[in-house]
Amino acid sequence: MSGDLEVSVVMPCLNEAAGVGPCVAKARAALERAGLTGEVVVADNGSTDGSPALAEAAGARVVHVAERGYGAAYLGGLAAARGRYLVMGDADGTYDFDDIPAFVAKLKEGHDLVIGSRFAGTIMPGAMPWLHQYIGNPVLTGILGLFFGQKVSDAHCGMRAMSREANERMGLRTSGMEYASEMIAMAIRQGLRVGEIPIVYAPREGESKLRSFRDGWRHLRFMLLLSPTPLFLAPGLAMVAAGLAVLAALLPGPLQIGGMNFDFHFMFVASALAILGVQLIVLGLAAKAFARAELHVSDRWLAFLDRWFTLERGLLLGAGVLAAGVGVNGWILADWLGAGRGTLFAVRPALVGLTLLVVGAQLMFGSFFISVVRDDARG
Image (cartoon, rainbow, N blue to C red; front, top):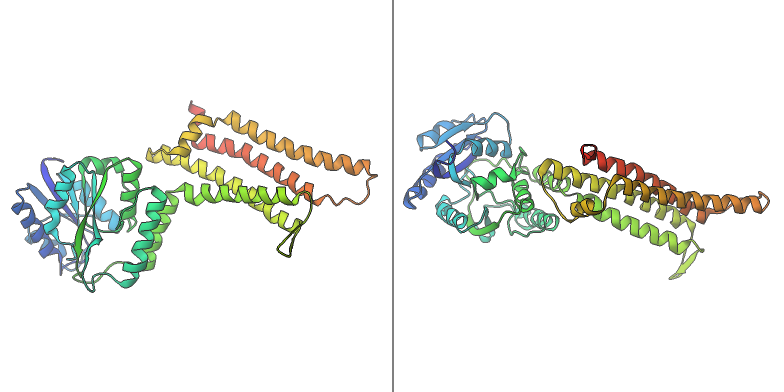
């Protein structure tokens, strides 16, 4: 029965014969010394080197997880765990399971998720490749903090602990290495209390399964897909602002700035920027609506949608912009007819009119799209 033990220590395992036995033994000894009732669960991911038997011999309960992947192994192991507090750590000797009581104590203080920090602690010589230590981990950790609004010093440390309730609230589901990023992102989005403790990181036993660029991309890809603001909304707003500013500045005529001539060629670029920016904003707002429906999260953009957006208001705004575009083009047509239908070269106002027509149509159809994603038809 879930929750009938105080602590479950969960270790993913794929061909870790060199390290799994000592790791299990050390975890069990740490629980016993601290007077914690618990278990060690090894989530075996298809080992062929005898790792499951070594884990069982050391006192672990082995759970076989058919789907391959770091995240998949943890999902299977955590689902089988019975403890009130869940401690995670790799079975390769890199993490010191004597720290289990410290992680549990931090949870008992009121934290929902506790992450080990190798950078605030000690990284032993040879434990972490320089590319990971000085570039990969700091960059990805910084991006995660920027995207999700809470800074941690080591977002990819594999030794962590959380309460059973926190695990259930986060609803984690990624199967690869990006599972580590998903956990922090969802903890922040669910308003969980996240803490850190310094740990020692040692050289691993056996062969590493990590692939630097592939797994780094998986982390970055996940963060981008879960973060519509930096992926869609921020660049979209910047594009719209820049596009409209350039269109307005060049509408009266060319500009000379610093000896350079800016003419209607730059208006073409500005028009494209404004149109693309509006499209990104519509996609970003739709992605926000989808994230709430699927992941039950909210933020200020969704608060804005709830407070301001309705299909009817979106259609009215789009129709207004579209009408302005029709008006500009109507004025060009009237001026041309009044001038005797000669040579027509109203490039500047025509670009403004074209931009307004396209943006108006985008806003109208985008409003329908956001309403479909938000499932407004039901309410």
